[in-house]
Length: 271
Image (cartoon, rainbow, N blue to C red):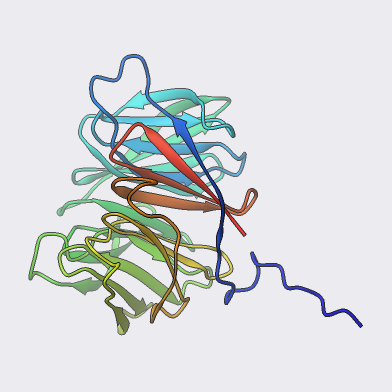
């Protein structure tokens, strides 16, 4: 009897390897500067929304990573996360802008203002997880603070980006200043603190529905185990992308979409 192979997308213990790398240029003709892609998320339609920090733009891409539309934002956009349906939220200084992506167009619908910086966001279970750079907060969708999960004032980027497990019980975030990936439970208790020679100036972190965890570092992208205890795989090196900043795993194509300090998205097909 032949043993059936597990689907890697549903097996939380699967360690991915790279099948291929592809690059896609997302520069627009009216971009004033070289791009800096600080946020990436996928829509239910298979389109993507990216935050171009350097050009103060949010860009909508089709499934082939071609720019369909953009909207200008008043200040540098630090991150973007999918909320629900056609809605995304973009971090701009101390505000969170809500933008709808419908029929190939981006339209800003509302905003929330905070008493602290808003440099990263995640959405889970009808709640917003907001990083101020030194603290991680939970807010309602109307902007009411639920609680502060974590705070570390020892630097300026001790809480960079965050990701929430599918069951909402585990929160991962990057400590850029101390070169760490930190894992919390949903009460804010620290579960693990991961350091590794390859975890240098970590920025983006992403967790798949099955629990695979990916982290952007200064010159590489890593897979770590779902408990945040150890590095499992190195998925890029500097020759593939100089400074990766943000990433998103697309289950439909089994690909990591990685943005960084340039006008290209690096799409890594995983197996």
